[in-house]
Image 1 (cartoon, rainbow, N blue to C red):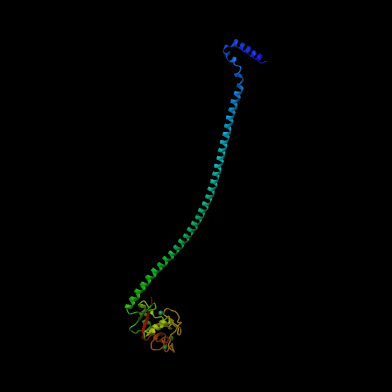
Image 2 (image 1 turned 90 degrees about the horizontal axis):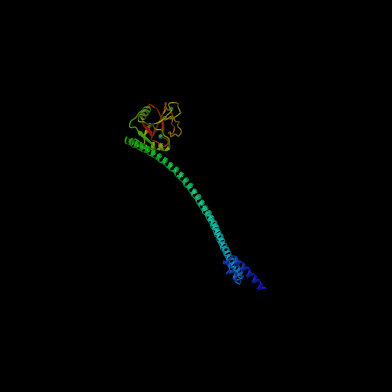
Length: 271
Ligand SMILES: [Ca+2]
Ligand SMILES: [Ca+2]
Ligand SMILES: [Ca+2]
């Protein structure tokens, strides 16, 4: 059977040899042609194995790359989250600090306003004191000048004591000429001060307008009185008052007398 097949093959190849002389050598080796499919299959299998190994390798590579990428993404996400947390905390701290600085600024502004107000008040007070100092200096100068001319000073008033005698009206005119007037006794202290001068002198008190209604020269009514006992008695029309030293009690020294009589007098100038 194999012999017949071989003969047929050989015959076929002989025919082929008749048409194509160049293929004659190949057609005479029937043994090697039987192994080629296996060789091809083995090569293919090898290639498949290589291909499969490559695919597996690529798969592992890409899986690892994907995992690395996910890890990086997770790390990045964590970093972003941490950054957000830190940023939020920092923003909160900055807000708190801003609020504190704002409050501190407002307090400083209030303190500044108070200090400004206090400074203005002190400035006003300084101006008033400066003005007052000027008045006091002027007053001191006035007092000093009058004292050099023989006036007496007591409790914000200057007193001129006459060295001659005149009627009440002439005495008052003399005081007016000196920029003063007959003395008005406003207090017990002033009465005592005048009593201690040991004088009998006209004072600025009269009832010449309405009998019995005593008024001071500044037209104020008499309230506090220091008459001697039994006075005023208007004995023979007595309408002018004098302070009459000689009584033991310093607050009972006044007498009404005739305005045309001659007495010393006391002028008063309030400073
Ligand atoms: Ca007085
Ligand atoms: Ca009288
Ligand atoms: Ca009298």
